[in-house]
Image (cartoon, rainbow, N blue to C red; front, side, top):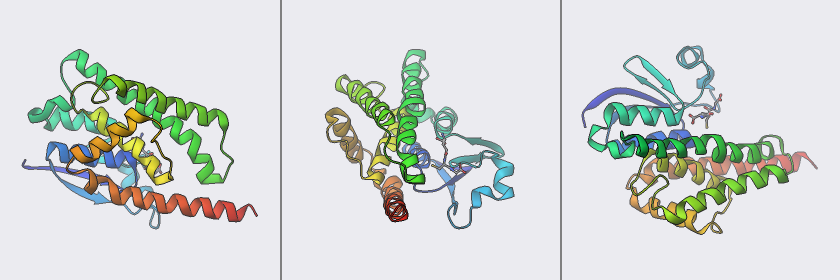
Length: 227
Ligand SMILES: N[C@@H](CCC(=O)N[C@@H](CS)C(=O)NCC(=O)O)C(=O)O
């Protein structure tokens, strides 16, 4: 693939960034990766970044002046613009595309949302686990497990950006030492994709590890702080 001129602002521990990095590798795009220091230098809050993305989130892309954020929208755009050689990743046929969109919306609105709702108060403020939020989160894993009981990939028979997005969300749990082995179909799908996607390790392992170190430190400091 030739040089796209695309700039990708990212941080390795972010699931949305990991998803976009996997999509770029799947499409074999040549891009400029710009890693932001969000934790010491708060680069995402600097005026030059806010001018580009007032919501100051990563991933953000700059495609020759066209700025876009939201990882799922970025993947839809990348396949639509640069993926004619691999458009099965985000099919153009309406029903196949709707099946992918359905899972992308499930991911942002149910799966990843319930994960954040349940775990963030524990990690950020040291709150006790909330049972109701925990049940909603587990139910979303149950739904996903059911989808994968009858389907090889999350949106049908082939790999799509829905798999990439959900894989990034689910593997974020590894960074919180949360095991999904009791969701047999989901677990098998995750482990299979890790082997099937030759770029999995490059795009994910170090970022998840960084996130794990952070969550362990947070848990420790919140515990010590409460004594
Ligand atoms: N739904 C967005 C979430 C983006 C997001 O919240 N990213 C986090 C990193 S995981 C971030 O940039 N946080 C910095 C901030 O909100 O200031 C996506 O998928 O791109």
